Amino acid sequence: MAAKAKSTSKILSVVTTKDADFEGRWQSICDRRGEEGADVDDAVRTMIRAVRDRGDAEVLDGVERYDGARLEGLEVTRDEWDEGCDAVDAADRAAIGKAAMRVRDFHRKRIPSSWEMREEGGAYMGTRVRPLDRVGIYVPGGKAVYPSSVIMNAVPASVVEVPEIIMATPPREDGTVQPEVLMAARVAGVHRVFKMGGAHAVAALAYGTESVPRVYKITGPGNIYVATAKKQVFGQVAIDSEAGPTEVAIVADRSATPAWLAADLVSQAEHDEIAQAILITHVKSIATRVQEQVTRQLKGLEREEIARKSLTDRGAIIVTRSLEESIALANDYASEHLVLATEGPDALLKQVTNAGAVFLGHYTPVAAGDYMAGPNHVLPTGGSARFFSPLGVDDFLTRMTFTRFEPPKLRELGLDIIRLAEVEGLTAHGRSVDLRLQKIRRVRREREAAREAEAEL
Image (cartoon, rainbow, N blue to C red; front, side):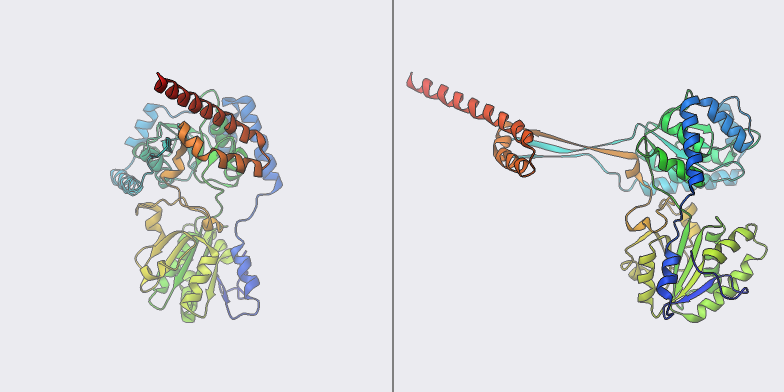
């Protein structure tokens, strides 16, 4: 966790790479994933077990307990879905449709395909690519409205033609789902919607109930209970990733506008008290001006308390010696969102090795990627961008390899297979090959004997 500002008038702490204690402070900034407490872990385990034992009844009880809605059934009916879509403002409907179209066009660009190869001697092998049979996407709900989460999770699955896309989202207290969420589900290709949330919804998707079909993968964001439940059911089903708090790192030079930098920091901080927003710059004067702008922009913000706590507790401005050092720190941080607010950002992009999504230049705020650009906004967090990738079509596909050897190919490679099996001490492996080689040699001898006998006639 980032160190708090020394002065109460400063919202963001300022750290310079020249400081004697920089390494320690920097590591505290980078250590942002956090862990759920044992109480959350135990509570979620109990919820999952109850859903497995009681099915729909437990999920319905959970909806009433946590969302305040008493439901007769979990699934959104066709009439409810139609009424929800009809209630969406025409301009909002158009914006949702445009976002879905752009995300769909982006993900269509590169869909992995099946392939095969043949070798002399009778070897035939390759890979078969197919969509998962059924997937579940989780969309936070209740009082919140997240049509963008629907689009980003469902569209890639729809692009590769997953036969059944199931969506779970908590209902409002009156038992309905936010109309904009239902509209997004329709244009994104969702097939069925269930009114349920939290760990109960994850358990229902993972194990199935009387009305909720079991899925093979669960994707989508959620609170700590949702994230913990996804980790606990992993293995029963696949999950997208272990998502942590959202984050942004901004690398800025003299060409950056302080007010815009502050706006980008505040926009990320308003997500959550434990979101993290950091600015990395070698221009010392920018740090002061961004501080002033952040203070100004927080006043009157609808989510001011959330954003202020995030920036005070976890935000920071890092003052470096050079732009090169700024990029090196950004790579070390491995941010979910990385903004290059610099001149010539395209050239700098070649130096970026670790980031979930990179936003180039002064006119590409993270908000563009959140809603309308096209690339997915479901991104690796907590430094996992070093080894995880954004959600995409690959996440909804499986790959199956196949191999066929004809006798000549097994004869060609058989002795080497046996030798490697013996190196590993797995003699039964070698025997499975040797028995076939004996048959191949015997058939070959019989064939040669038959030809010799025919020649003597």
